[in-house]
Length: 141
Image 1 (spheres, rainbow, N blue to C red):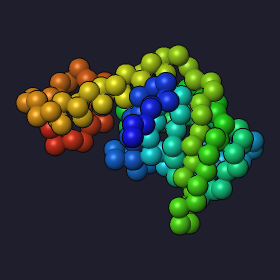
Image 2 (spheres, one colour; image 1 turned 30 degrees about the vertical axis):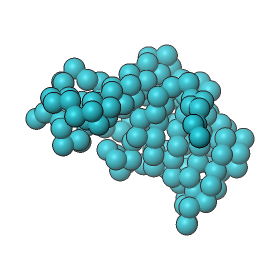
Image 3 (cartoon, rainbow, N blue to C red; image 1 turned 180 degrees about the vertical axis):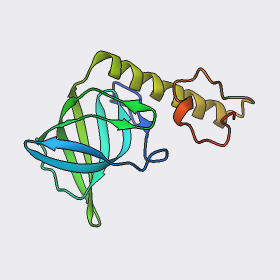
Image 4 (cartoon, one colour; image 1 turned 45 degrees about the vertical axis):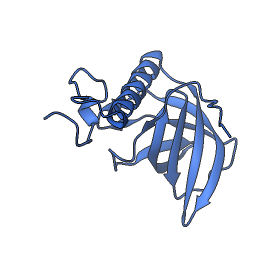
């Protein structure tokens, strides 16, 4: 049974590299969350807040290697995981340069993963857009 990928943009895992929370604005309320993965049109995050499907959010990312202008989005799913909630957010408004940067990082990350799986020697290059935040053992020092 094959699964068809419906996503328009590549995803970039974030929690492996970052432990810093980001702050979402929901109306006048600030809600912290930890990004699990990120693409140019979506975010999966963990939060202690139960955000209802349809909730509109605004957030900026300012963590190692990724800094964006404010983005707008909407909660599209939310699942309780113990005391926390894993939440999916569709990004409806993002600066085009931020979108290109996130997409490039995700593509470079996925290319690297594929090369590692294929056993390609010397997979790491400093011109990789993911290089600054990479913590893989293959990363050149």
